[in-house]
Amino acid sequence: MKMISNEDLKMLFTEARTHREWLPQEVSDQTLRDIYDLMKWGPTSANTNPARIVFVKNGPEKEKLISSLMPQNVDKVKAAPVTAIIAFDEKFYDFIPQLLPIPNAATYRDMFAGNKPLSEETALRNSSIQGGYFILAARALGLDCGPLSGFDNQKMDEAFFSGTSWKSNFICNLGYGDLSKLHPRGPRLSFEEACRIV
Image (tube, rainbow, N blue to C red; front, side):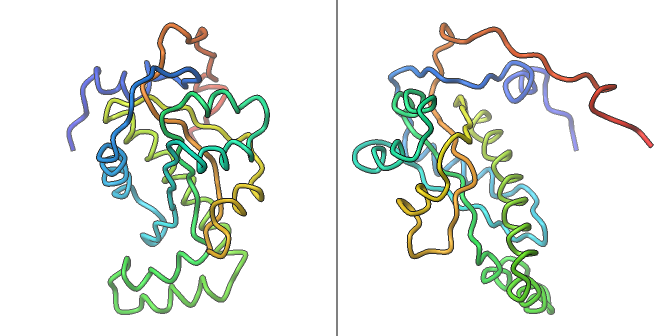
């Protein structure tokens, strides 16, 4: 596999920023489909793909979303052209026979279906991993992102997922960020502070 260019690395990582202010520019439904069609190829445990996404644009659905937010996040979501609710399906295992085409796929399904702590942990962990793929896919398609976790999960789940097996993980604003409103970039830990080679 060939390394991507320095320009691509800048776009995905070193010069990408978390945005809180947005330009008044729409994001097309096709672009949202394209994000999913990229992110879905990232690896997950046993190819379970537990992430589910609701893209919220405007109107009453946006008001429902705003009602579950902590006060400091309201203006960020109001201004964003799109907010994605990155959720997970607690019953992701029902899709294992479809997603894991091997002779003993039913064994995997039964393993998760019969062990709620394992299935909950797997769904949360892997939907979080998929959320990372989501952000990279959005950036690769020229969008800016503003991931947030400051909201009432129970209230959001009641508003959007009542009667389903879906549960919210985090949300991510999408659009074209206003570069003039960015603060200086926050520091990161060094390799020596965050890593060990053993």
